Length: 460
Image (cartoon, rainbow, N blue to C red):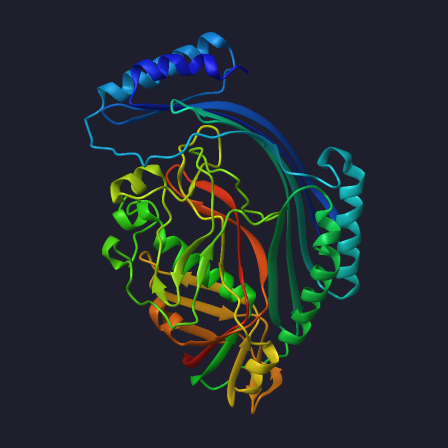
């Protein structure tokens, strides 16, 4: 499709205009307790036009006929002029021309349905052999093709394939039930299966449920806590990534997904100890939240949201960057052709430090190691939060002891980050789908981090 011919009218009739063509192909396969229960395929395509005059307009069409596209462009221009005038200042950004594709070592189209069925069947058999009664497995591949052009000269065409894998396993023993679910994802092709070693990861993690079933609660009270990458990842995402979204800070998200304890004048204020660094980085190759450019045609980059315990940088699109007199840091995303681009995370994590896990454990007299979580909650301003451990162990005099059943951390964002005194060299990521907006948009993200030690936390 020749996108350039639709820009000329936008250039004449708007302060700013853009066209985004988005094609998404998805194949998904689900296994439940040894039975293939679902095969889903979808192939969707559509066009979004966004125009700024008095205000932004946003018009979409799933028709690729020239007359329909022309009408959609004209309608977007007309609506933008009819809307109530608002002083929108877009950040000044360089124009970009690029055509790129993320590499696949094992192409998605070459990985046949029979291979997917065999893969999930083999994993399921291994889990069943280990007396794990409830088993749900899903693997999904997606190819997203995006063509973007705006009235400032940017023209970008990109093809981004990715693979997603989810498992849920439950075990029942002597009336006690425990469960685990995890998500893994990577940009690229079906080399993912070997590079992520999904069979061994699923089986090894699921086996731990049988140990957890025998775990006992410990007396509540103050103690040291070491949280693993799964826990540090969800903490980074929920209590750093979301509160640093500029639209949430402004109150735009208030009726949809909450607000933020952070304000626009909070930059430079302390939120944690000196060893706390939280990053959002869409440029990580092979990551599930990978973006070379955002959905406004801005080149993406690594952002320190919290740096040395200080609130450092908001997630910005062009509108909020312009409002603050800054450049966009490439944080606009849309999950579908018919949804507007809004400020989103990509790969959000706590930056690794200098310790080994062994060194961190050795320096704990009494506490717990919480490797993973079974539940988490956080309030609407991303401040009061709760994490319930799944795989957790008692630490006494620098040594790992017996498993601990479902220890609970109830704290605040500032208390959590201010209690951190050591961060390990490790770094592990887990995939997820981050929800935001109205209509709801779910985008692919990574969450992760190292092992993080917190001193003197109240555990129940």
